[in-house]
Length: 88
Image 1 (cartoon, rainbow, N blue to C red):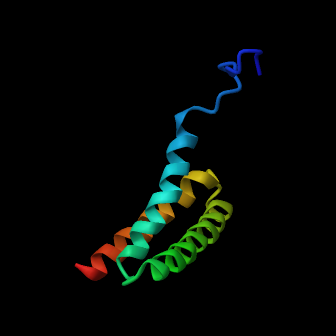
Image 2: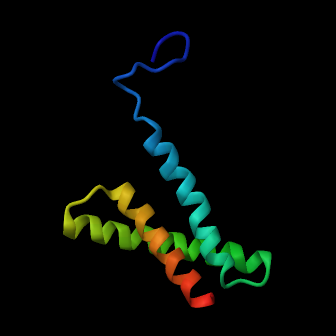
């Protein structure tokens, strides 16, 4: 890291990591909001959906030899799509 705090271009991981982090914060909460009736239920369900997305993403990543971070986000989006279809 340079003295001015700016990373070199070779060290930067790009915007993909930023978008993955944002998706991992938002998508499980959206999924939980499909089923919850209170703030407490939303928090508990979002933690459960996050853990399910991470575990299923690790499993798919291992068996299909894919990038782990992207697959975790895709699993979270798949869970949201199923929850949306179930409630509408």
